[in-house]
Every structure is written in C-alpha cells, then in structure tokens.
Length: 166
Image (cartoon, rainbow, N blue to C red; front, top):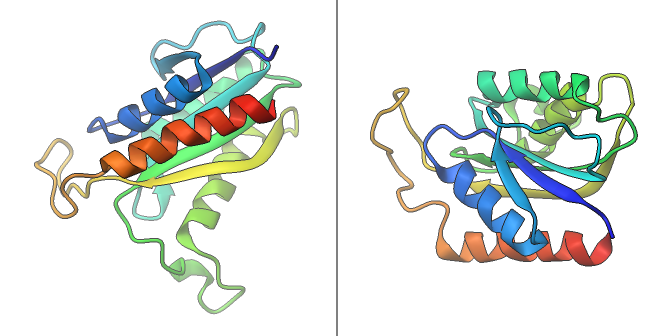
C-alpha cells in the first residue's frame, strides 16, 4: 500500500479546505507547510498552494523549494492549487503558444518542486476556484463562497481517484 500525505500552503483558508478534502478522499494526514514531517517514509506527496496574479504565492513557492531538502528523491508528486482568477488564457502566453492559466501555474509549481528531476510528477492535477482578496487579510471580494460544496466534493473525489490509482 502506498503511504501518502497532503501538504498545503493557505492564506485565507480556501486551500486548506481543499487540502483537507483531498486528504479525506485519500484517507491520509494533511499538514500545512509549517508542520512538514520527515518525508522519507512517504511514497506520494500531494502538494498544494494558492496563486496570486498568475504566480505561486511567495510562501507557497518557498515551501515548495524547501521540500527538495526533505527526503523527496524518488517520490511521486500530485499537485493542486486554488486561485481567484478565472481560468482564461495566461496573458504571458497570448502571443506564443496560448496556455490556460492553470497549465502555466502547474508548470511553475512543477519547476519549484522538481528542479533536479528527483521526483515523478503525476499527470493527475486538481485546480479549484478560491476567493479573491485585495489585501493581505482583507475581506474576500467576488467570488465569495469558493470553494463551493461541489468543488469540495470534487476535491474529495480527486483524492479517492488517486487512492484507487496508486
């Protein structure tokens, strides 16, 4: 049996909600980036963060880089993120090969985690809408209510699918 863990970075609680549902579906523990255990005994790492302005959050990027020093060689990694932005064409790719925002975000996360190609990034990925905030801890603007109950059900189903597959 594969031993897995869900690790996340969350600012307003949306990514945490999604991470907890993923962990529930996988039937594994869920930790925030401040409480990462030794990862040597895990086979699968499910890693998530929130995005801001087309980039991995600063804290998310930092924890993803730090993971490279935590016994992750040879591990399988599944990625997820939340973002308040609509999943349109990423503005930096409009004049090149157009890519959706979620595609660019997953590529950025993958580069942070797998700089030296020491892990296997799984093609299974999960993206979920998060609340838009204008200030660091300000009240959310539109869309209030994300992730929705339906999105949380999808997150749990994603975890269950990973469990079945692995």
